[in-house]
Length: 349
Image (tube, rainbow, N blue to C red; front, side, top):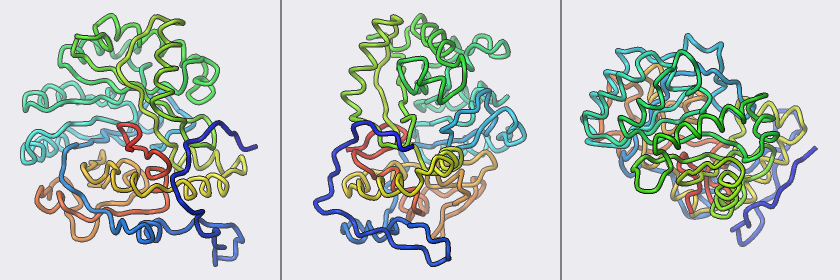
C-alpha cells in the first residue's frame, strides 16, 4: 500500500502532461522524459559551473544492508573497494582543482583500508573533508579510535539517521541499528561534534521510509533536535532531507509494493525548475571506486559515466574539461528536482 505523509507543496503552476504509455508492450505508464521537463521549463540542458566538491565513492563494502540504499552496499561487496593507486590519482586531481571539499562516501567509507591515510593526505592539502558515516561503523572493534581520528582531523561527519524513533529507523536499516546509532552519536558529542563553538560539525540525514517525498527540511530539523535532545541528550548541527532515488533497493521496494508508477508520478508532478537549476551535479564531480568519473553518486551506481566528450577516468582528469561539462541526465533526476530539491547537502531551494 502507498504510504503517505504531508508532502512538500508542489511548485508547478499547472499539472504535468498525462503519463504516456510505454511502447514496449508492457502497458505500464512512464513518466515524462526528464530532459523534456527541462526544456518545457526553459531551463535547458544542465551544465557544470565548476568543481566545488570532489566526491569519492571509496567502495560498496558496508557493515549494514539498508533497504533504501541506492548504492546497493553491504558486507558482500568487499571486492568493490578503491585501491591505493586510485586514491593517489584522486589526490593529484584534487591538487589540480585547488582546494575543493572532499566528500567521502561508500558503502561505509571508513572500512576502506586506505581511508585514514587518505584523510591525512587530503587534509594536508588544506581541503575540507566530509565523511558520510552510517554511525554503527564507529562501534566496530576493527575501527577502534575512528571517532577520535575524525575529530583530530576536523572531519565533518554527515550521519544517516532515518528518524528519531527506533522502530522507524530499524525498519529501514536493520534491527538494533537505532540503539547503536544513539551510542555512536553520544560518542561523537563527547568529542565535541555538534557542540556549539567546537568547530566539529555533525549533520544528520533523513530519508523517507516509504514512497513519499521528504517533509519540509527546516520544520523536520526542529522536530529532530527537540526529540533527540529530550529523549537521548544528543546535539547536532543541521538536518538534511534527501529524496529516495528510484534505483536499486528502493526501486525493488517500489516494484514489490506496487508503488513504482505512483511514486514516479509524484516526482514528476513536483518537478521544480528552481531545484533543477540548483542540483548538486553542477558543482561537483564523482569518482567511483574503480576510478571512473560521473556527474553524481546516483549516476555512478547506474553506470552512467560523464559524457559529451569529458574524460571518463580519473587518470585522464582535466579540470578545464570537467568544470563546464554537460551533465548526463535520466529519469532518476526527478528525485533531485522534486519539490524543494534534494542533494547530498539536503534541500536546494
